[in-house]
Image 1: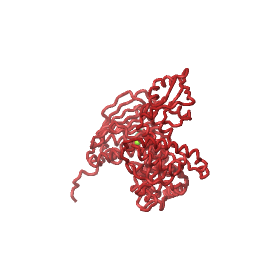
Image 2: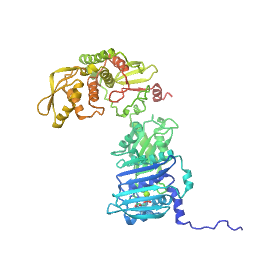
Image 3: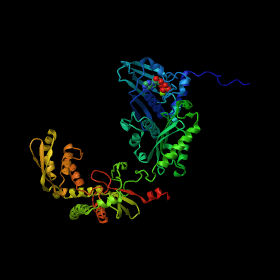
Image 4: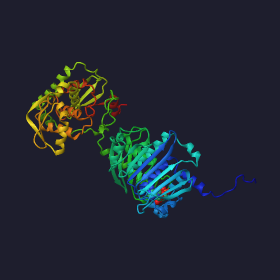
Length: 596
Ligand code: ADP
Ligand code: MG
């Protein structure tokens, strides 16, 4: 027998135990964020702000500010004690535990590996407490003025465990994980306002949301348009959330998210159940985007199998998997899958660089008209009115000598849908949709800009329009009178707080509609147009005289709009910045039809 070279078995000192435990709970900066945000949520916070400071190489400071309950001064030292928690008392409570934390490990672990400054004030106490603890040692404590709530600042992260520091991934990976953690919490708790600041700059904010759907639209607008809502209940499990349209799948499972009783979890078995629910709808080797929130009896869930609580155990997992599978299948079966989300269609793949389109998901598609309605609407009078509108713009464009070189591809007109969109195709076989109103609005706007003289020319109204205003509006109108007159409006005061519009710009066309005049003046008065009064008036004048949505066009008229649009300087957006053209590349069509 040789003598043991070691020093024999001994019980580790507390500091070492905490550092080992810390390794399990706080692997990386993102896990610190997760633990602290969890605590803030448990404390009933309505606003949680995460501030990260980083150098190009590492995260140097994490600060979490919450407006939750705060911690009683007398209990602060206890909070940093390992296995000290206010959330459960015995193992029995573990089963029905609904708070996110319960192991009492996070604060002790973090204090073991970093420099921690806590400022907290319990809502029942008058003064706050500042408490500094580092490497498990209390360095400072004292009263401090503070609003109710808790602010934790974590610095010198992993300074006691330099080896762990080495294992951290690149700074961008670490920051990515932090953003992911905050995003997950924002989705799980729509009612809480989360803000994320990186080096003083706001990166994410979820304020004002009332539902998961709303947060999704805010935080992940690209995904949101492809998501189908899920609401399903069976076998004691209720599932709500969203699933992506089968055409919107990803190469990785990263965008599949699950929460059980408000706790985010990862589980490959749950993922597989979702994918199985898609059956053949999902191309093999791909993953849907999903956010599924499961609620079930807390007794049937055991979250205490892993320190980070990211894994959980179900007492009857088979049932849970079956319900998920069923929920996905039913949801997809009942959904109208013929409309893939709208944002994969890039807005004009032709010259996108200088475009600044509004998100496509905000475009509203009016309900299509029935055939008989269409016939009724296409009356001769309507036809003539449109021809007149188009003739007006054509004439003026033709007189313009130096047209900019056209960036516009030659298009072949195919038809019109919903009395609103022109359908065309280009030489490459791409499908091109044009919003007839937005397009003509652009044409009219360019015309106004090019023809300064026509723009300021007035025509007298046969019946002047009287504007009855509030005192402050009337006052304001005398301030902007000159601007309006330069745009071709003729205005006169008309008794107390009233003005009379005697003339309007010639380019407004046959203006028999007093409402149009009121609308333009009131928009100018409200200062809604950020671009200035004259610019705002030009845009509105362009809009009012343009061919409207909902007007049936003859093929010649449709072609005319396209040809006029092709001569404008910025054919791809209307003067308000909305897209005029949306194109579906041929490749995209092939993808949609699974031809490749
Ligand atoms: P756990 O969350 O598992 O209970 P922690 O170590 O994360 O353990 O926190 C210990 C205790 O400190 C919590 O039980 C709670 O009472 C208190 N605490 C921590 N953070 C906050 C906070 N932001 N607001 C109020 N109380 C907090
Ligand atoms: Mg906790």
